[in-house]
Length: 261
Image (cartoon, rainbow, N blue to C red; front, top):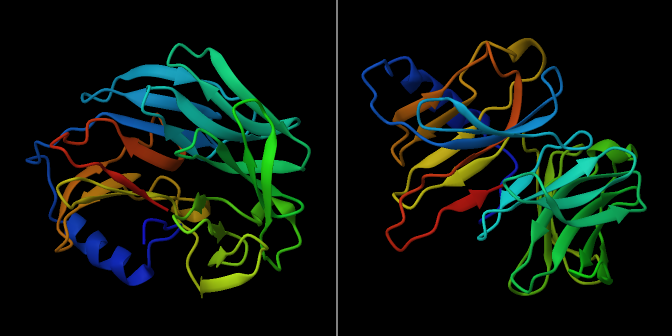
């Protein structure tokens, strides 16, 4: 499954224990992009391999989910008033913007056909929008969470046309058909950040640290398939709540990295 919104507690504890043996001898360095929000300023940051901030972008409001497009632009959802989805260049210029009529949008996905999938909250639904801002399809999403803020985050359109959605407030992942009927679901998952599968099989995990966990653990780490941590990112002095992190320097050996949500 190419879609995760959680890291199971057992896995996290196993790899956390491996972190204790990870020292300064690790020579792995990565170029990163991530959103910071909450107790930190709302901003999208790019860091070079030495940890220097080389690009910073201020979204119009709270934003937690982004996607680096093949042309280098960045697509992200923003959840203020107004709310919607924007595409910006690395110079910060807006090239596309969809303003939603719902109370809040915090999830989005650019589709292979050029359309954009928008995760609307209140009502909870997946809206497919064309580059001309035309709504071409609306799929209702099932959730029992009444407060719109936690109704839906990450969404994907599957090859069969169904929608896979992560419902944060319920701790559930559901697949629905075009009419919104649930055909598969997985419940009881934890609230966590994001993950990226690298071409070498390793996984980059964004360690969401709210509340009492803030400032006490690595904000991201790279783990092998045998749960050996080979790299970690920790900089609580400069960055507070990091929600999604993406490697910009994944090896290009003919394989592609996959965002696991």
